[in-house]
Amino acid sequence: MRKAFSLKLFIALFALVLGAFLSSCGGGGGSVNPVSQIGGQIVNWNPNAGYTLYAFIGENPYENPPIDSCYGQISVDNQGNFTYTLPTPNASDLSPISFSPPDSNCVRESTPTVSPSDAKFAYLYLMLRNNSVVIGEVELDSGIDPFNSNPPPPSGTPLAGVYIYADRPFTITGISIVKCTYQGPNGPIVYTYKYNYNINAPVGWSYVEYVFKSLSTDQQGNTTYEEDIVSKNSPSSNLSWRIN
Image 1 (cartoon, rainbow, N blue to C red):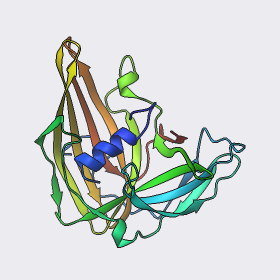
Image 2: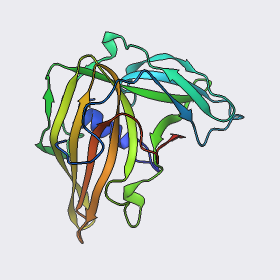
Image 3: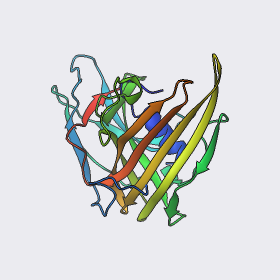
């Protein structure tokens, strides 16, 4: 699911682990301003490819059927520039914030705190189509895949970002730890995912960023990955809109 570098892994874990840190990460997690419009340049846009960009809002477009709705087409010029005014989602496209392991091979060891617990949220997805065929997703990311980088990026490197909608102000603080065990060629291999949440979402749309902290693998292949997920006012300068 992780491409070079795609938000799909983070969204899947964020949507399944979140359902959607008590972190000392600088520059994120405090009070942030609502966002009413997004835009920029899609750096790998091809004006001759016949692509059309659509906005979807919901919990997870990768479910079958998708848990989201289409909110219309977005105009993109020949250089890949676009702007989009963020709409108010339908109530049916909002979901409760809950936590569960990503799959049956995983167990949760730590769960962040959501306040208030009855808050609802949705993600914005920019989906690319050629006629009715889904080509991919336009995402804010760094182009860095920590799992395929040798060495991994420096701690504190912003990896990607998403825009979320909140039906009321809410916070997510604390640490999510999920351990997944898979059978390797020489025995079980454990993957530990640690997410340090420091989300402070105002009512309406706001921006959330994923920041790399660490990645380590021992001689048996057991891997520990750590990341901060924080609220910010705007994307870090190393992130660009890309087709993934």
